[in-house]
Image (cartoon, rainbow, N blue to C red):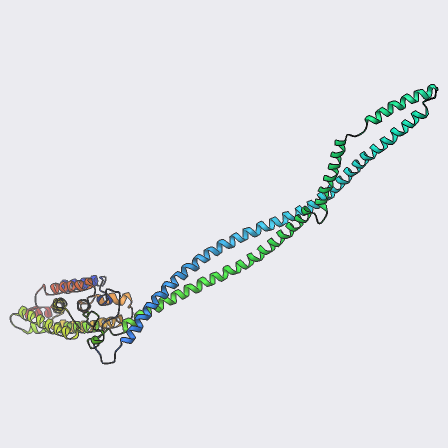
Length: 467
């Protein structure tokens, strides 16, 4: 009969990976993870619950704000990197501009010297041209006087000289500069002097403009260099700010988790406090600890029912059936007493879960008896029940106050006592429908596998002992 035990183990292993989280069995539709508690006389915890609720709301605002802050600092970090790159490019361009302006200023000085020389030369040429016109007049007047003084002379040489003087006078009269040429030469002289002054003499617009632009380019390059250095330091500060904001966001999330854990540890409103909250809709509730204790009672009672059925000489199946029903009724009475405002549907589902849970306990005990014998099988079944009490009880108690690790939760989910507790808690607290029906299905499957081979007879036990 080893196959029955192996099948039960296989079902337990599969159950470890099913959605049977304790918290899901009492989680409200609003996402409140506060576990219902047994009624107590330790005072009214309404103020503590209200404060915890307000703290949870504020923690939600805080985590949302820190998330936005993290996003903002991330964008700031990216923008700072782009800004530093742009400042570096601007600094390089300003340095090139400053160097170019220095070269332009030096070239302007050299060009100013050359322009001054050109202006001086043009001035001399214009002065010489003006002086030539005056000299021409003097030459013409001298020729006229010579012609007058030699007019009466009959000397052939004098006559020949007079003819030459007359020709020279004609040439001198024709050699004068036209007025428009003189005007153009004066303009050229004045323009060349203006260019020379603009390039070389302080106080003129171009000379002072080049000087001012050169100084401005140098100041711009110096300022951008200083700005680039400060921007590098600012980037380091922004990186530290980003790290600090990330730490703040992490701390805010931890605070929110701790506040939710505190809310989960606070007792839910009990029946004695219903008067203060009469206007609020009444919801059914069953303390998870109570569901776990009822499941432990049913599990331990199943071992006793199986042992009592083996002692019956006849109608062992009837004894098993009656024992399972009585055990389920006893558990149902406890659920009815310990629960608050349970609906008829919840009580009916709880009865079904208790029947399947009691049958599962009897089935496991029967399978162990078929493997180890009636006495040793009962002892092993009792030890397993006690082990389940320790593991399932600790996990459910811890889950009511704070999140439980996935390994411990999976270990508890692999135990039949956990299935019944999950079904009862889900039915009493309007919790997860998945956990409710998975728990019932697992219990029914284990019951069917355990009882499929029948109840061990005395001769079956004797044969097992002889083997």
